[in-house]
Length: 63
Image (tube, rainbow, N blue to C red):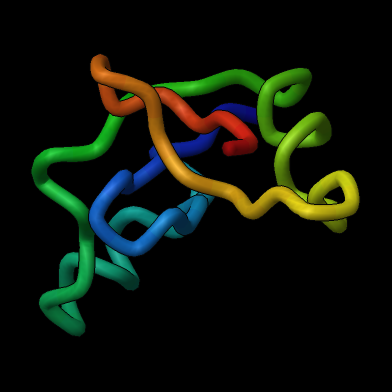
């Protein structure tokens, strides 16, 4: 499964739910497409002293 990652709110949106998000006006038009592996890396608890954010390209990272 693929996801859209939105750097603005550091959230993931499953592509299979795109229509639902669009219908509610919450689909991130400025998001970055990421795969299941990236999602699994960043969806859980961040390492101690870090939090989920984004790099300069809008991709998720812990910082």
